[in-house]
Length: 202
Ligand SMILES: [Zn+2]
Image (cartoon, rainbow, N blue to C red; front, side, top):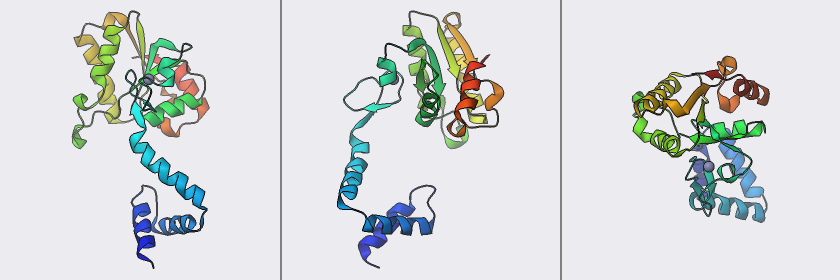
């Protein structure tokens, strides 16, 4: 097998969810595909490292030239309803329902001492600053995945709000137990929608 092809297969097989044979099949697909597709793919691959940044308000992803994302800059969204998610993928899943009209805060992880992820590694302090800077009462919807890391993260957020004397301006809620056996990322629109609609005080 030509060296270049072997290298490409090695590269592809490092991607998650790819089996050995899939890597080979994908490499052959690329070998036989049109030049313009390869060019576009090559450009997109380098652009994801240079043309994406994080929103300075909610920390979701946005174009490098924009300081804030399209959700935060929209006049139609309720800025005092903030949905806290672990990952950007969770935000995308909730956005797909087309129903949620608040804004977000992406933590980029959850507290997990076993994996050396602590509160200081997440955007929790930025969330606290957002609440402090807000002129209104805010509702924080903790959009949790049903696992121990998220339990720890939710509890920490609640504790921080109390510690900073911010409880008077925060209504803390969490998704209803509709989602108890689902990860947000994999839940369907109806499940997400119900989980948000029937959210409970936390
Ligand atoms: Zn934003």
